[in-house]
Amino acid sequence: MGVARAIHRLTGSRMGGRPLLYLSTVGAKSGQRRTAVVMPFPDGDDAWLIVASKGGAATHPSWFYNLAAHPDQVEVEVDGRKTAVTPQTLTGEERATAWQRITSERPNYRSYETKTDRQIPVVRLTAR
Image 1 (cartoon, helix red, strand yellow):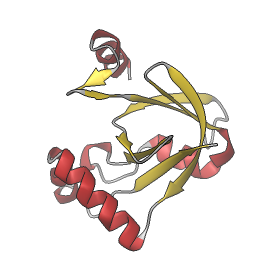
Image 2 (cartoon, one colour):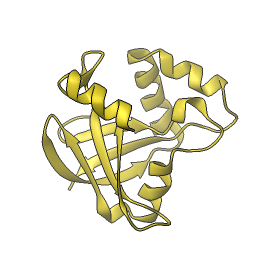
Image 3 (cartoon, one colour):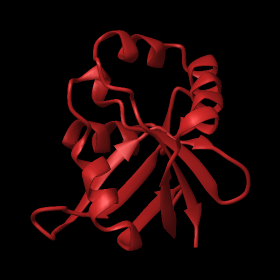
């Protein structure tokens, strides 16, 4: 995560023209506060879609398990603004529509699906 934070600082909170999102969760096993840097896809006012791709790895990223274990303790920081959010893992048509949008905007995400047998989760984070 150190590299992602360094890039985040150097690019002024942007990667490829898009602001990055600091996702703050509580560890599912450790109970410790954890922070991950992810690519957000704005989804209306005060909501974002994020992708639990882990680069197409066979397992979900740790932050995805943390969201499930402690959904009431999730916070994001985008453009220097911290906001408490409620996570919702999308399913069915809602996930398919979001995935289509994400892969249209960022075609590199398509390759992640081909690297793994798991369905890559898409999570909506909505400000509380």
